[in-house]
Every structure is written in structure tokens, then in C-alpha cells.
Image 1 (cartoon, rainbow, N blue to C red):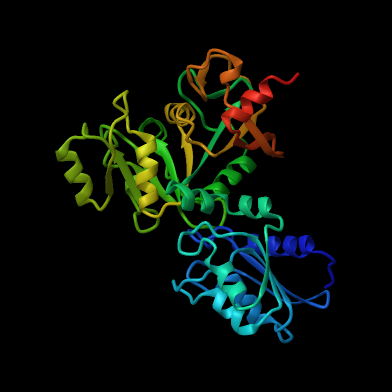
Image 2: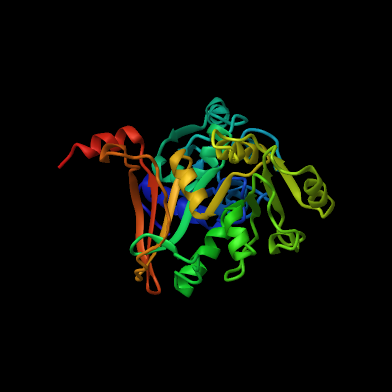
Length: 376
């Protein structure tokens, strides 16, 4: 296979890296390509957390000597001993002439040390090829490493007039079966899924992955007063999917002990100014437990709180071709009184699933939104 530029080979490495989606967390997705004389002689990707990294897999698959070649890797080679030996050392041992790196690794255990080790060994490095694409590929990993907080995806399905349920609370099903399959795929790609107690009391959901192949995320219920029924589906089958209940000091001790005896985890979280679970603190606590990504599925109160506090990184909205009129709004009052204060979004994808339209985007920087608002 012949390609002509650093960017072309890095695109191939990015394509390989994506194959590790859903299986490498909390590690990043990484792809590697080895090139000699305009020919790819080896390639690999990080397949699963705990297994060999992309560089090692590419080196093992090399059909020729690696010495004097160019190695392309989407993320800086690691320089520390973890579950696997350092990739930087493995590369140095094989003596490529050059290593092209998509982006430095934000992990404090690496953070430039891999690049420095390669250069000290006399191997030329080029850093920053398709850097923005490489960062987006692992945006969850970067957010977690740089802030200690998980990457937050806010997902909900609504009618064209912005309702997530009728005025009686009935909501099954707003979206089409293909959109429901997409929702389950989203679940499988996140470490945790979060809902409010209102959703549990109304729908008694399972919050597992059933429509696609994939792992079940940790299930997190925001339940300040511990109102969850002891017979709720979320409290069953803990061997298949674990559940954590986020409570405040208002939760009754007697019920806490009942829940703990049944094997369910309790996470004590401070209250916010409205005596609710402080979501910012909850996400920080989840981050300390190694949760790098959270899919927030609702209901309306949680959706509104996440947006009020600007906690979401990504938003996925399913819009069904239906109109309800009076009903439950997807998003409540955000205390926004003029357009300059509106939350700005940048859509990455707009596509169709069944009858529904899917809008997938990221929150814009508030300062950038203010500048955009002045354009006509």
C-alpha cells in the first residue's frame, strides 16, 4: 500500500485506532503505521485495555526490518511501565529513523517524556500531524487527564416541539427503533450512564445494552433522598451491570443500610444550593473512581441542571417527527433572558435514523459564542 504524505499515513493510523472503540477505556484509542520507501510494512492498534499498545502490535506485524523506517502513531508513545512495557523503549530498540506523532499524551506519567526519550536516542520526531483529529478521537481521555473529570455526553429524544413526554408523563416511545439502537450503542461506548430518580420512578428502566453487542456501563442514579424502590430493576442483576446511587445527607440511614446489604454502592455527594445532588461534585467523585465518560439520559430535571451548570461536553438530540403540544419540556428554565447568553453548539454530525433526525454536537466556548452572536 503506497501513500504520499505524513497526513495520509496519519489518517490511516487514525482509522486503525478507531477499531479499538468500546474496548480500550480508560485507555486512549491509538493506531500505528510503519512505513519504508513509501510502503506500509506494518500496522497495528490498541485492541483492548491491558493488552499490547498500538506500537507493539505494529512492530510485531512488520514484514521487514524497522530500522531506518518512519513510524506514525496517533498519540505519543508511552514512557512508563504500566500493564505493558514502555512503547518508547520498544521503538528505540528497533531504531526507526523517524517517529511522527499526532499529539502529545496528556497523561502526567508521559506528558512529553516519550518524545524526549526518542530524541535522546537519536530518533527524529515530528509532533502535531493532524493534531486536532487525534485529540478529538480521544477527547474523553484528554478531558479526564487534564481535569480529573469524566467527559459528559447529554442525550435525549424529543418531539419537534421539544417535548420528551406528554402532559401525563407518557414517553414510550418518542423515537423510532433505529434511534433506540443508536442509544444503546452510545451506552456501550461510555463508562457510566446517569439518570435522575424521577426517570427511575416513572419508567423503572434497566439502562443496559441490549440492542447491540457491547459492555454494560456503570448505572448511576441521582437520588438525593434515596427514594428508589428496593424492587427497582436497576437494583437487580448486579453481576451484569453495577449500580451506584448518588445521595445526599437527606437520605435515611435505615434505607442506606438496606441498600448496602443488597450489594448496591452508595455515593455520598454534597448538596447544591437547591438541596439537590451537586452534579459537578458527583462527576468529580466518579472521575476519582476511574470513570472517564458519562452518558446522561435524563430526565428533564437532570438535563436542565447539566446545561445550567455547563457540565456537558457533547449533546446528542434525537428529534422525532411528532408534535405533542402541551407536555414535558426536554429543557427547563436556564435563566437565559437574552440571546447573547444562549448556550452555543457546534454540530459535528446531522443524520437520520429511521424516521428521526439525530443532531450530534459539542458545546462551544461561551466567549466564542458571544463573538458569533454579533455576526449577521
